[in-house]
Image 1 (cartoon, rainbow, N blue to C red):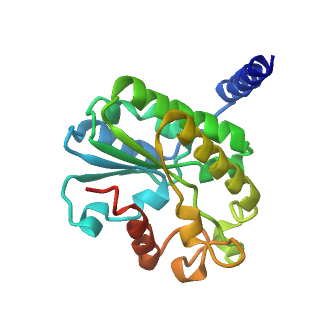
Image 2: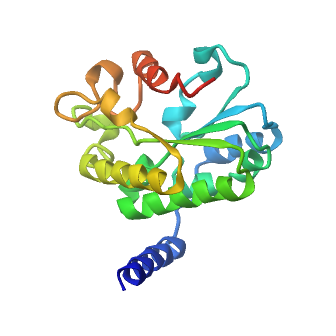
Length: 220
């Protein structure tokens, strides 16, 4: 009975997610996505996949590894990533580091819906590129001391924690690696540490160095 109730709840969330009217992606999204469709991904590559926080880093240079490819697109949400997975999955990359979800929240998405779409992303790799090592990274904290830029995200701290707990459980269920970046980048109040940001949402160089330290054992 309990299992049936959980399944019904998941189906209801899925129906709500699939039926939702999605806003049109930005011109920048289409520019980058069209480029990524023609740039090859191979089985020797390590792919960083996500939104502007991933997009904003020079990952290959940071790690000194030319096999690392950045597939972050600014402002992307979970459904944007789902829609542009084909060129990545078909390349069967060696590893994928995924971080996505923060931009869903200001649109009214629930943490449960965000986790469900990330599950769909994970399922796609598990089904169509099973040799790819998928690392699901936590959503980062935000800081409401920078209201002029990040005000749409700054009130989402509680939802972020729910997403991250959902992702931790998801990784345990699917046998994937969960990377807790949130704890490494938060201050004593649970906000994005001001040493690592100048807008409350995105990272400065020092923030990327913290991120690098957390995942370096996995990037080999």
